[in-house]
Length: 93
Image 1 (cartoon, rainbow, N blue to C red):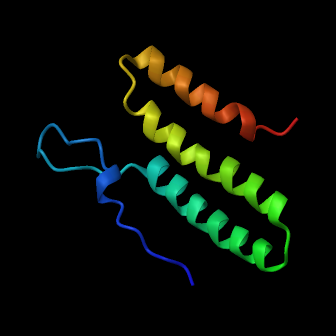
Image 2: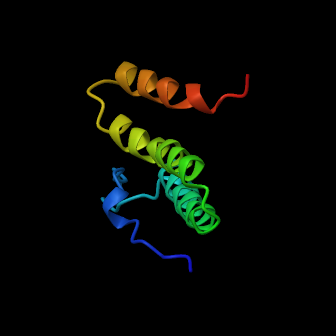
């Protein structure tokens, strides 16, 4: 049931010595987590748990979108602030 997506469009970093795209483990993990959450949400929907499924789907997939947006930051400070913003909802209180 799990679908494999191409991760190539998400590769951003280029090795300055070889000019070859490098893998980004944070992006890879966020995609992996999002796919697992989508699978679980499908299970929840078959059990008629629509509200929690929708909430989990939105919050679980937004992490990857925020990481992708942080990569396009204009400065290092903006990048760091974006990552802090991403991690806030995931912290246990």
